[in-house]
Image (cartoon, rainbow, N blue to C red; front, top):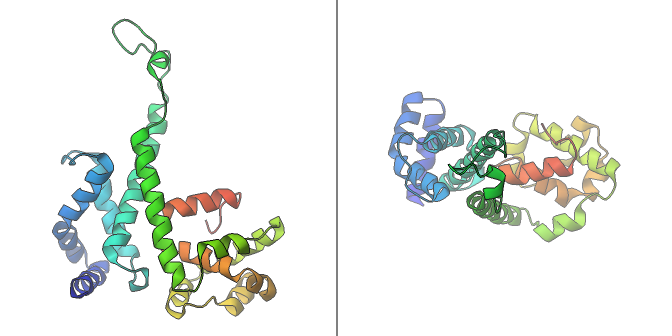
Length: 240
């Protein structure tokens, strides 16, 4: 516990002091390299782009962290993995521009004939592990609010109009300074404030309270993968 408190103090000092941030990143380079190695399935080399991305993600974690988000290193780990997955997705999209008719070897065998399975299994494993970690962390955070994942499924809006109303309230919460932090501290859904600020009726928010609690929790932490799924479900993306 004392070690975690020390880390948190260092993180808060690094938020407003670039030298402190550099010192913190330097001190936790073994952690950053270890997280990168987990993703690459090998020790990272100094020239690997993935290591640079992991360092940037660690700095991003410093800037985005608050005590209400739990252990800092857990938060940083989730963010590093999410950023590395995003990077590999972009790289794979760019690499896919190569023609599948391009010769893959000296016998002029087309590249398409060498692709027995186009999926990147390494990325699939990393994505599956990252998704599981996010769900487990979200479940633990939801417990503090008296909400379970099964409650969210039961409480999800069934009509598009109601779904849009919840999305509108969420958008207001995300773009209102301090509201999400207040929500984390009080552990109560600010229904009156959400209603007055977004124009969504109180009864709608009350009826879908557990669903809104889950949505707002997802937008207070590094749940990048879960947020991506929510944006697809909400057709156009909530709180962008």
